Each structure stands twice: as structure tokens, then as C-alpha cells.
Image (cartoon, rainbow, N blue to C red; front, side):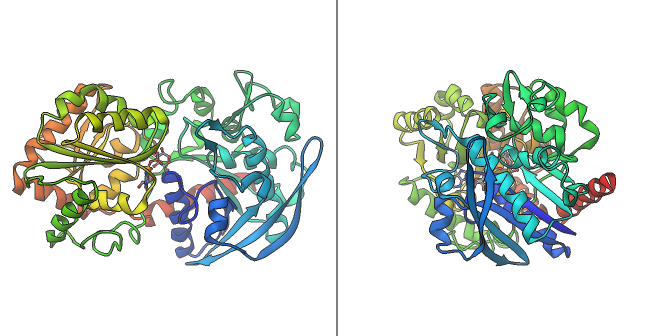
Length: 482
Ligand code: ADP
Ligand code: GLC
């Protein structure tokens, strides 16, 4: 099968969160199954820095807008492990400081930027090879599903080509003013509540949900949650209508990148059979955060996260005064919304002996936290899948999570210290504190703690299984369209 991926992030070039990890890894798992996979990504400034002078495959592709045309180049990003990468080069759109936003807000022309990206992918495949299926990710690529069934409706080469939309986060939808329809040359009759319109705006993700042949999201629980008002962010009705075509497939992990037995970014290697290296990683981590004299029975709690409302940091702020009374050292790495940056750095200033925060995006430090912490905290309000808790399992770092989405599906707490972690159900900081206290109690019982670490470390969350599930979704979509 010939599969084209279109996404706004992909490791190792462009990453703000887990989307990049998925788009970086799933294509390789599909290629391993014998499929031909191509991945399209915008040629952001950050990508250009890493792959300067990427060879030009198509010199000039025309993308029409309301009053003018834009012209993009398609660049060859090379082939790794059987996956071909292409970059969409439009300097006026993508040669910018960030991918989506600056600290003062989203780029005002994001609709044009990702509308252009979506059309450029379609146009490029007409020359480079029309695939059997388009697999598009999140709102930034969702318009491929819309364009193929509107502007490209009469193009015979796409008639039988289905699209699969993966929703990595229903909280980000791509909302734009109504004139966007005209700017992107979309037919006005699609600006209705059963299609692209949402509260008088154009909603890219909604368009994708309406027009994709199949929809997936990144865990079973989240696939159910987004059909409810609490988690659907206004799209619950649209998702309910597509319920028969909506599947939850849990993300996998790229163990070539996230495995303590061969991770080049951590201080020492270790495995379930020989955990001794983890002590060295813990020392190294505490040193990196400037902690001194932390005793062995102090639990190191790690956090690596985008700083966003989704991630539940208010819970930490609410019970911080209680939490710091416990025998803990907290290390947090993250970047994002200024409000949460200040909230967490404020706590670290108040309790310097207990908490340190690094406001940065730093992959090496993320690996060091996975390896060096004893516990990993993810109190998310909602979490479509969540990858860090799954990485934590592999690193013998016990997750403490809120039971939602993929956190619910991957972490299992048993009354007797069985299972692979700790979780809380309520929407409450005190429930979180309780779960942390249960974890801290078990931490003092080294035998049971080690057994829990080892149970998590041997669990297999590789991409092989999920890749096969995606193939089934592709096959069904192709069958339904033929
Ligand atoms: P989300 O996609 O919602 O941000 P995930 O848990 O799925 O959450 O994935 C987050 C990914 O981003 C992980 O690979 C994590 O290590 C990485 N990450 C998040 N914040 C940072 C940061 N500040 N520095 C380095 N890596 C980060
Ligand atoms: C999103 C979600 C996260 C998920 C990731 C990859 O960013 O917030 O839960 O793991 O996408 O699918």
C-alpha cells in the first residue's frame, strides 16, 4: 500500500509534543510491514537549519488564493528506514521563528499557512505519485480531507483515494474567521453547521472530521471521551455522527529512542535485570538541576511537559504547600504558556529546597528526567494518549497520573502495590496528592517498589501492534471508497 502522511510535526526535525514522536515513528513501523510511506512536513526555519539546501524535487507548485497565487517548492528530505520525506518550502509562510505562534499569540495567517500546506501536499502527489491513502494529522493537515471532497472533487485521480484523519488533541481545532472560506477558495456552501462552520467560524478540524473517510484518535478511552461534552471541545456532536468510523488506537513508543539500555543521552545504562545504572542517572539528574545532598529515601518526582492548561499544573499549585512537606525533590522541565511558566517558577522560588524548574525545550534533559526520576507526574485534565508515562514505564520511573484518555489505558493501579503505577480519578488536587502519597508510601518498601518498576519496564508498547491496526483502518477506508 502507498501511504502519504501529512503533518505539522515530525521527529527529528520539528517537535513541540507527542505528535512529532508519532509521525516520526509510525511510518517506520508501516514501512517495516512492507508499505511504501512518504511523509510531508513544512520546511520551517528549524527544519531548514537541520537540512540546509535539501534537493529540489519540484521547482514551482501553484497554490491559488483569492487574489493571488503562491508558489511553493517541494524538497527531498531524504529516505530513512524505508520512509521518504518531503518538505513543503514556502519561505514567506514557514521561514519563521516558531511553528504556530509567538509569545504574543498565534500567527494571524495560520489558515493560509496550513491551507497552503494541505493543498501543496495534494498537488505534489499528483506529480510524485498519487497514494492509496492519505493519513492526515490534526487540524494543520485536516484540510486535505476537505479539499479532496470539494475543490478536487472532479479530479478523477483522487476519486477513490480516501483520507484517514488522526486526532491527537481535540482541544486544538484551527478556528478562523468566515472570510477564510473565500481566502482559501473553499465553496461557501460548506460554511454550514454540519460541515465547516462552528459558532460562526471556520473550524479546520471539524471539516476534517466531516470529510475524512475514517477518523482515529490515540487511545480507546479518548475515542469515547471526545464524544462527550466534557472532552469534545464542542465537536462532540460531529464526532458522535461519525462514531461508526472513529477508532481509538493507542500510540506506540519508538524504543530506538526511548530505552534506558542504550539511550545515548543518559548518564548510565540499565535494564530490568540490572537496575544499578539508574542510581547514576538519578545523581546526574539531581546535579543537572542543582540539587545537593538529596538522600536516597527522598523520592525524585519528574515532570516533562508542554506548559498548557491541559496538563493540570493548577493541581500542583493548589496543594504545593502540602506536597513540599513530603520527602520529595521535584524537577520540572517544560515550556509553553507564560501563565504556567510563572506559576511553576514561582513555586520553585518559594521552595528552592524542594522544587526546581527549567523553562526550556531540551530533549537531552527530557531523557535525563525519564531515567533519573523515581516518579513521573502527569496530572492532566485530559490526555489523548500521553507518551511520557509510557516512556517512564520503560525507564522504571513510576507514573502518577490522572485517570483520563491514554493515561487511563496505560497505567494500572492495584490495591496491594501491584500494577505499574498510581492514578486518581477525581478532578481534584487533593485526589492527586493522595495518589502521590500512596506512591511515596510504596517507595519506602524497596522490594515492592522494585517489583513495580520491573513490571513496567518489561511491558511492550512498541509500534508493531498499532501499525497493524492502522493498516486495518486504511484497508477498510479503501474498500468503502472503491
Ligand atoms: P503532548 O503531545 O500533549 O505534549 P505527550 O506526552 O504525547 O504530550 O508527548 C510529549 C513529548 O514532548 C514527549 O516526547 C516529551 O518528552 C516531549 N517534551 C515535552 N516538553 C518538552 C520539553 N520542554 N523539552 C523536551 N521535550 C519535551
Ligand atoms: C497530543 C496529545 C498527547 C498525545 C500526542 C501524540 O499532543 O496531547 O496526549 O500523546 O498528541 O498522539
